Image (cartoon, rainbow, N blue to C red; front, side, top):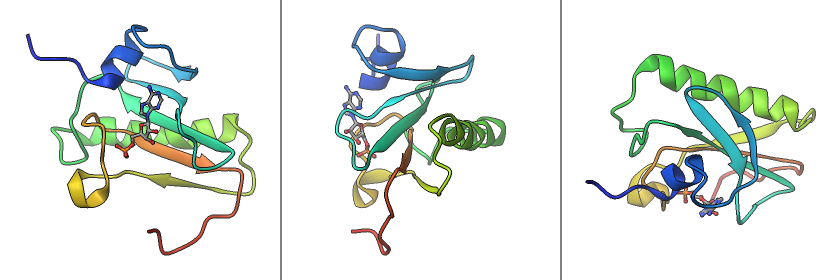
Length: 112
Ligand code: AMP
């Protein structure tokens, strides 16, 4: 049996996390090392390794929709940033696709 990703284990409640949203296709929980006052990860239930897929457009769209929903739920009325790190150069450290929803402070650009 292939080993589970960290985020699969969170989704199965084997590892504790502060889950703030869940539906049939994805889960959102607070990042353990927040980079801003609000930092939430939106993660598909299916263990898609990265934005490189395999990922269909319906799930990709749903994840973006939920990112905006979570931002509203967190009352990020002044704006927020959604980030997907992909692969080594992108800074991805967990090989299970996730969207970072970051807000509660003014963001800098360009990113590091
Ligand atoms: P990335 O570097 O884009 O792959 O993002 C992985 C994110 O997962 C980082 O922001 C980590 O802080 C976060 N993370 C790692 N372990 C946990 C955990 N147990 N619960 C919540 N977030 C985590």
